[in-house]
Image (cartoon, rainbow, N blue to C red; front, side, top):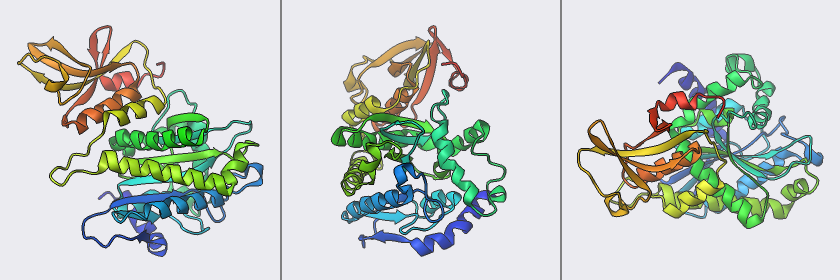
Length: 373
């Protein structure tokens, strides 16, 4: 284990043993572990839009989400805090790592100097347009309230795009699952509560970067909005939001992570993938076609779904004497990531994304580096 990771684990241990976890599961089989992280707390009030306290709202909603999940005996809920206390930002993700969590969900409220409103759910990443950096900066600036923050964060600057971009590496492995979890939560809140859809987006949040599992950050709404703020702060609003977040988590567990007794491969339904795609913010690269390469073979196969584990929209092309089989074709990188996840869950565990431009294959890493999409 790297020294930095070891130090992070040692630093958070006292916090974990104080706040611990809540579970109704006595089975020896590993439960589905959910870490819930109410943002802010203690001396960090979060945003104070319309005079409300973000720290109190998110704690209440988080505890209600946990209460719903704890009714399921195969779920263990772990909280980064259960009371109005200040928890250093760098300690929150490692709590999830220590308990071998299946997912990490951080809950916050948004703010703006306008009457902006709506629900947004974030995964770890960089939106090259820069539209989402401001939200991440606001949430990351809590580090200035921590003692010895200069030493702890080793020169990290929440207002620096370069520092923010450096945070994205840890969560890349779990991006597919994070997008699906975020989409299920987002879709529930938007459709069932009739809230404005600000979509699933990527942004560099410190609280997400060090967790080794699918991780999302939910912004419940804008406290600074004269109509939405009072709703989010209300007893009714908090209860409804908690219920929809919990439903999204349960749906994720049911359709994606739970494996059958004789298989370790989770399943994703095509309907869930379609829902995730529809509710995910587009991330298009003009002039580029992304595809998922399923296989390469000397055998020429009919591209009907029955030959490809039920996958539709499979194309065949002959390259370098081999037939290569591709699933999907889109300029939207977020969409192709979801399609890759779906293909993996269908059994193509080694499939990967490729990029074409003007009919020629390009290095994916070079395409993704472009600033002008």
